[in-house]
Amino acid sequence: MAPKVSIITVVFNGLNDLEDTILSVLNQTYSPIEYLIVDGGSTDGTLAIINKYKNKITHFVSEKDQGIYDAMNKAIAFASGEWVNYMNSGDTFYSNDCVSEVFEKNTTTFDFIYGNYIADYHTNGQRLLKATLPQPPHQMILSHQSVFVRTKALKLFPFDTTLRICADLKFYEQCWHHGFKFHFFPHVISVRSHAGLSDINRLQAIKETERVLMMFYEPMHVKITMQRIKLMHLIKSGAKRIMPSFLQRIYRKNL
Image 1 (cartoon, rainbow, N blue to C red):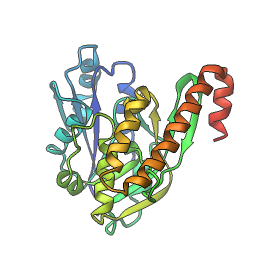
Image 2 (image 1 turned 90 degrees about the vertical axis):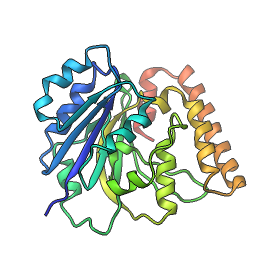
Image 3 (image 1 turned 135 degrees about the vertical axis):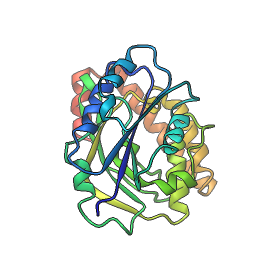
Image 4 (image 1 turned 45 degrees about the horizontal axis):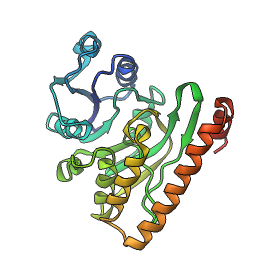
């Protein structure tokens, strides 16, 4: 019997892009799926979009929260699926068959199924990003839009709400170091809008990344890794300031 999948969308004032996310979930060919939306008390018309599809949404709540990770934690209390995927406002599945393709084979021996994602820079093009697991001292690259995780893991290790950007990184590291089994699905699962918290506030993301990695790895290795990440950030920031947008699109496409 196919396992039940809970797909969760967290949103706050997402009028311009929430509908694409909702349709991406509702158009999935897989069954059984339940769809949960947690809204942070939107005031921009987001609720009208949600009400348009309310008959197809399993559970919906709209109330103020303490940020995205608080909302993601809150949703787990309502999730009845064996597996969870977070497809937040502005992000979409790569195709209508994504969930079916992920779960068409036996998944009983895994706790995480993860795949690649496409970073959508909107007018500046797109870029394929390939997922990686921890290989100390390197940082893992996982995007929760392209990860299916057993609900039990999310209940065991709730997202750390003291982290504003990298709580998902801490969650993956906790599960990895506690022996949870990760399985790579070698395809694109999602298209992620690159206007998220970690993209808007890159310097804070770097600081939080270092804070998280220090919890799990030898400090000297982490410092070397973070020096490399900071250097790359400086190089990319400088390139963006002097490189015309059409050259940025070519650069991303060929990375």
